[in-house]
Image (cartoon, rainbow, N blue to C red):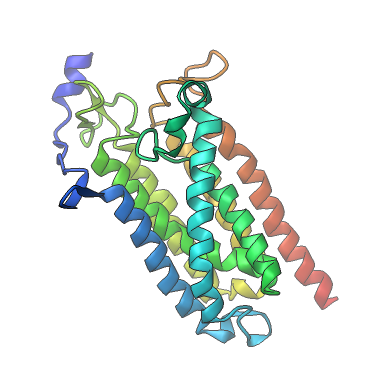
Length: 283
């Protein structure tokens, strides 16, 4: 079986160096560049959205470009601190307790999206309250651009040859250098497509098509629900983290599914709450 899986892997892994470039002893990794690119391109897109007052409730954007510029530092700190904390708590707590220095070694174990999301939510709430910005509209504009960061992040995962998928006989399966000699699903690219491209286009179509920003909380809710559904789907193709494996003695349930399932319900609640609030306001 394994020999067949290996033979059917007709797409060779590109073997791109995880280090994009080095300046003396300083090595700049693609993973770090992905975070920077995601935040910067998302920032530019958000500025364009703010420039379109007709997209917003009352034909006025709830925040200024200056607010958005100031928020860059807040969101960067929230993502990094939350992402690393989430990884430690959800995926690698015993190892971190034995060797606490690994908590700050972001390159050793990585980040958790769910933790990064929690850190970003805290940053958004604090910043919105400090600057008298409607919290749900703050959620909306950030949710609209997050898929850009997810797209770059998953591509960086692929370049690093990490978070690969389960064994596969699909003609596009790949033998990853760190994944043993067997063909596997390139699940990082599945996630890049669903969490990044598809979700970005879906949200943009709602923003520009039905002016969804005029219903505060709708875009945020659809993003959270869409990410949860996308992640749960891809988890059926993604190899679970080695230190956790499958949960509850199953051969399918993963930590990613467990953490993403509440997102579907929370996102659905947020979207429905937004729609009901608008209907009540019009009554």
